[in-house]
Figure 1: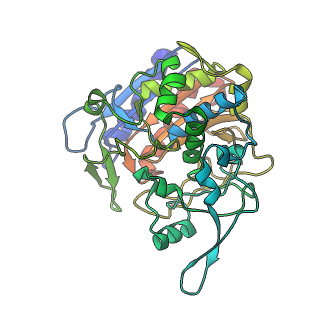
Figure 2 (figure 1 turned 90 degrees about the vertical axis):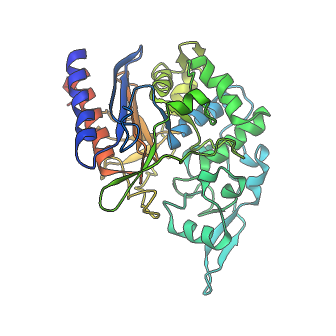
Length: 397
């Protein structure tokens, strides 16, 4: 099995790194409940450079941060500090000032009103609170331009003081909800989010190179961000970093880490909350994170509104998908081999992961490319996931 997986996965990584206008470099890993069953790297850390990509490279993981913030919230639920029905304003009072966007007048001025109900912690976890991202929503982009709202990647509180796109609980819209969840955690714990993560997630799981702020040793291993042009070429952005002394620790997107650290997090989910240095969640709570919280509501595709940041994006188009606390759930068997009811998500710079509790199998694919849903990186990820299933769980493919 191991030899077959190694050969199949290596072929996928080499294929995307060696093709013309492929990916600069990629790291991919797969794990069972006990340990990694595959670790691979291909390409270089920066286009035009000669430093090879290595499995210990450090990545900006963007929205792969969200699930870690979700664990920090579920720990609070488990300790009876709060519930998923708790109004978020109890721990993040600024959220009470956020208005609902009703539209724009003839002069382009936004029209807003007070929401009909308070935003709850659970709505934030499920992305049903009303918040969006300007790179996935034209109305939000228009509002931000009119009101001078900075991008969320600035890690400033002002970037979160935008508007709701609808009343809390009305529908699903992917957005800055989990950044607000991070503020709830900080309010409940009385500590910065990075400190909470270190004490309650990273140390119990043995995640030694994870954080909002990179150490010098982490920065020395950082993979360079790249921008893909309309002609398919890649331009390195060696100076691009998420803010390293951020005003806000952004629970929705702010972490840096190597793939190997995230694999420890994936194994914790596969093992119902147990990590290599201790338990971070009880079994029942860990399973709750992967339950559909939307009822009959389904998530939707993400339209690329800012072309430099995202293409139109959707996992498994045409297949119904739900949302848990805080993962995407594929409601039907996926073409890669992933069974119905399992978990996954992604990060803006074309990082992707899945967690299959049924088969005790998970994986992570990491590149550093804008815009999101890069055709080469995304298709490479799907090929990697398929290669893992065909090698490890052959009857699924």
